[in-house]
View 1 (cartoon, rainbow, N blue to C red):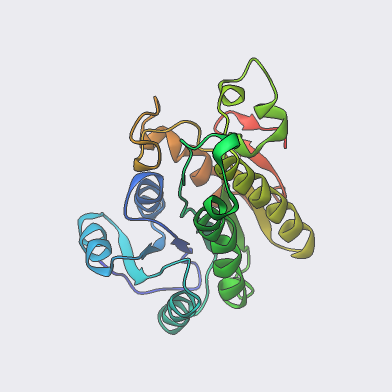
View 2 (cartoon, rainbow, N blue to C red; view 1 turned 90 degrees about the horizontal axis):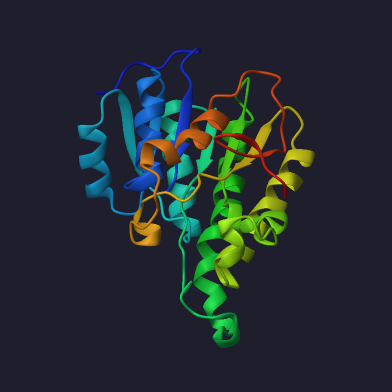
Length: 242
């Protein structure tokens, strides 16, 4: 169900939102009374999910790998909503995480970096003009503890037992991108979050957390109060080391 927009309506967009943490984030933000754009590569699937979600959820076709798709999505949101308050860069892929570092070649990086690194940059760049119109623009980068150099080298952390070149390094790159945006965009709140090991299609539903638990850090970063910090990396429990 769509409702008329007002100056006090918070407008958000979530990429990769037809499943897992993205879908749960849409549900949680819509439950707050926000207008939420559900970014979907498959427009029909997105429309079905939007129709089944309580609140003002609107679907927009959006493929973070495609310049034209992202530009068209930004034009749609501008035409209908006029601005954007919160952008959640959630879309991500695991890539060939089963490939060992010894067997990894350059080509393995391309699809992973395309979605996990270039996707957020492509989407953020396209939506910055709409975020500029917000009184409290927020950008949430859905990262991972696997992107933390400190966590992945800590023998007491589970993440240190996983050996992969592509996915962890893509999230490390996203963390750096987050800090650079945070410094370059005064007045914005740009933060990275680690959902934790959540049961989603990304990991073959092997994670011990539910999507409700996994979405917690994303929702918290999306709903920051005015004046809250920018350029942070957090999980549901608090601040994480880079």
